[in-house]
Image (cartoon, rainbow, N blue to C red; front, side, top):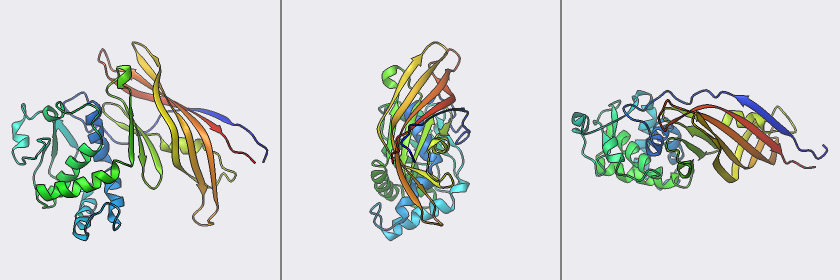
Length: 292
């Protein structure tokens, strides 16, 4: 194959990763991270099933397995104020005063906005992982102290796996882009009510010698997220980086490894006269850097 450079531009509207889970607030970054952890709970605990990965004992791993088995019974996550709804926070007193829930699988989980307001707006993912995982363990009968111990071990593992980008330096507080590094790398973008998965469309743009091979992203280097254009009705952002990816087939063991450059223009519209923005769509530009 001759050396070539290929540019592909595609306009698309992404399907939602999940329906809105946020109630009673205009979500900031910390709330979005709680939503992200909630929606991806099974993926977050899955690596810790393997012995030694999260430094858990066999008994502690068994509690995580129970969470996955009953995950479908968990209700929507609700953000509320303990000052307005104190009854939602009477059943459980935690060391952070963030969570309200009961010791029963499927019990509603409330996140206290009054407590979140005291936290840094760019709080790391460790904080929501510890709090929400503790609540799920508490649902299955584990004491709150023991739940915190297990949750902190899982959160420590994931602090090395999650990278988040925000637009706070540009005066935009409700948008976040996340790189999620599991067995494969995934890319998500969040606004105040939903999280969108950008990964499937990115994978479609990656080129392989054999177009029938499956694609997976292994690494994105030199990644940045910035505002390309900003006005009274919306904002256009640009995520860019150098991507390493694999084309492979489990059945034939055929495998190709390549590098390329991606630029993702993500468009948001302003919500009324507020300072919040809502996802509208994106354009992907892929530069193939493969050589003979």
